[in-house]
Image (tube, rainbow, N blue to C red):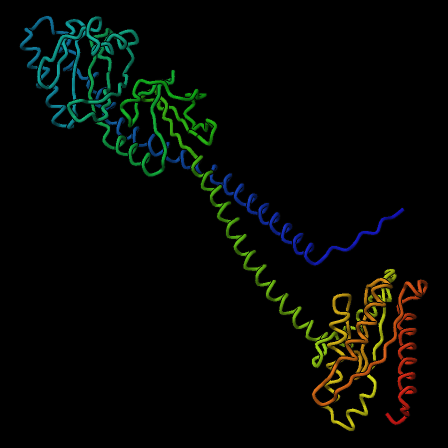
Length: 478
C-alpha cells in the first residue's frame, strides 16, 4: 500500500539546496527591485510636479510685470486721448506723440517691443514711429489682430520667436484700449523676452532628461525648445483640465507626464519624462546581481568542495589501518551495524582471515618479519578481493572481507587467493600461511549478518586447527 522512497543522496541534497537558495535570491532581488521601481516612479512623478511648479513660477514671475504694464498703458489717459483725437491732428503729430510715449516706456522698462494699434486708422505705432498699417485680411503677420478683434479680451498673450534676437522666446501682451464708455479704440502692448523661462526649459530638459512643452487646449504645441515642433500636434491625447491643479498622466511604455493650466496664457504646461531607461537599468542591476550571486555561489561551492574533500580525507584516514591502508576496526563496526539493520543481498559473502604463526614469527624472527606477514596478507587480500567488496584489518593478525560475488566467482577467488599466498615471499621470512573462513547468503539464505560472520569465524578456526594439526604444531605454544 505504501511505497518506500530512497533517501536523497548528498549530491542531490546539495543540488536541491543550491536551487532553493538561487530561487530565494532571485525572488528577493525581484521584489526589492520591483519595490524600488515603484518608489522611483513615485519620485519621477513628484519630480515632474516640482519641475512643473518651478517652470510655472518662472513663467508667472516673468509675465506679471509686463501684464501690469500693458494694463496700465491701456488705462493711461494720454494714450486714450491720443487715439480719440487721432483724426483731429496730422499723421506726423500723432506719430511723434506716440513715438515719444512708447520710447519712454521702452527706455524706462527695457522691453523689446512697445506698440499701439489704432482701430480707426489701423496704424501700427512703436518706439521707432509708424511701423505699418495693419491688414489682417491680407497680411498673415497681422492675422493675430483679426483674432483679437473677434474676442476683444481685456488682454491676451501671444508667444513667438523674435527673429531679430536670435529666435528668443518672446511674449506679446496685447491689451484692449477703451474709452470711458467702453468703446474699443485699439490695442496696446509690450513684448518681453522669456530669458529665464527659456534657459530654465533647456537646463531642466538636459539635467533631468525630460521634455517640456506649452500646448493649447486643442493639443497644439505653442512652445518647444525644438523650433521644428512648434504649432505641431502634441503626440499624446492628454485629459487636460483647467482646474489649476497638477495632473499626472500615464502615457504608457514607461512615459509619464504632469500638466498644469496657466491662466495668463490659457495654455497648458506639460512636463514629460521617459522612465524606460531606468527600467532597463533595473534589468541590468538584476543581471549584475545574478552574476555576482553565481560568482559567490561558485566560490562557496568550491570552498565547500575543498572542505568536503578534506573532511572525507580525514574521515577516510580515521577509517584506515595505518600499516596496511585497509579499512580498520572502526570502519568494520560501522559497516557491521549498517548491514545488521537491512537484509543482505543474495550474493553477499563474508570472509574471515587469520595469519598462521604470527606470534611465533615475532618471537623468533622479530617484529619486522611479523610486519612482512601482515603486509603480505593485506596485499594478497587486496589484489584478490579488492574489486569485489571491502577488506578490513580488525585485529593484529585478523582480517575480514565483505564481498558481493556469485558462488562461481567465490570458488575462483578462493583458489586464486591460495595461489597468491603460496607464491608470496618476503625478505625476512619466505613463507606466508593464512586460515580463511567463508559464509554466503547463497549457502545460508535465511541467516543474517551476525549469523554469517559467526559461521565464517567457526570455519576459519576449523581451518586454523587443521593447519596446526597437519604441521604437528602445538597451538598452545604458538
